[in-house]
Every structure is written in structure tokens, then in C-alpha cells.
Length: 144
Image (cartoon, rainbow, N blue to C red; front, side, top):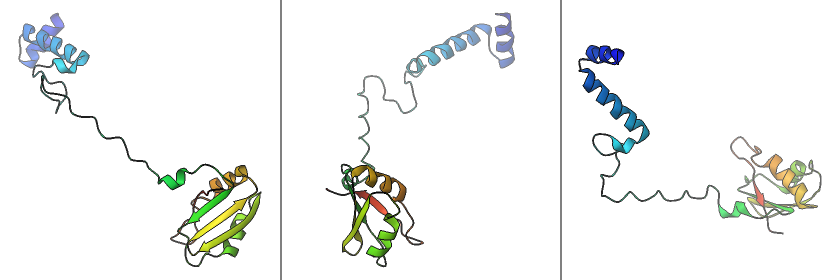
């Protein structure tokens, strides 16, 4: 306690006052709501008031379409206008199990593989592939 008295004197307080401050600091560490003001954290509700409602759950990061079940068909969307079947075929035929590419309308393509594991490997390898300086390949599983 001699060291406490010396530090209290240096801080301009009495040893009893310093001891009380030490006790309050220890209690605050163990229970922040026990501080002199009665409120634990800054911005906490005063005692007797109901606690604030919990934050809303986070929104899904990806559209539901990308949560499709794995299948042997890959769906490519938002393709640039200059992208054609031959270009996509050259890209996908590097992957084992490739069967064919179909483009039912501009900007949209279906790529078929022999089975789902081969399609999954191609999806993982090519999703995000840079088709042009500004466009990337956006792949998801299609419906079988």
C-alpha cells in the first residue's frame, strides 16, 4: 500500500481516494455496467428501459439463381455481344467432359458436360474468366 500512497500523492489524491478508484476500475473490468453512471457501455440503454432490438439478419450475398443445385449444365449470363458459340466452345473444350454450347439468345449460353463433377471443375476454373477488357464470365449451375 506504500506504493499506492506514493502514486496517489503523485496523482494529487489521497491514498483512500486512489484505493477507491482502483476498486472501481477492477469492478468495471469485471462488470462494465457497474460503472459510476450505472450505464455499462457508451450508448447503452438506461436501467429500466428495454434493450434495443437486435439488428436485422444480413441479406443473402448472391441471387437465388446462383444457389441452384449442382448439375451437368452450366449457365452463362451477361455475355458480351461479340461472344459466340465458337468462342465459348474453344474455352470450355479444354475441360474434360465438355459436350456442347448452346446460345438461345444473345448474352445467354448453356454449356453441357458429361456429368456434374466435370461441370463443377469447369465452373470453378472459368467463373470470373476475363472475356474482354471489361467483361467477365458469370457462371452458375443450370437446370438439368
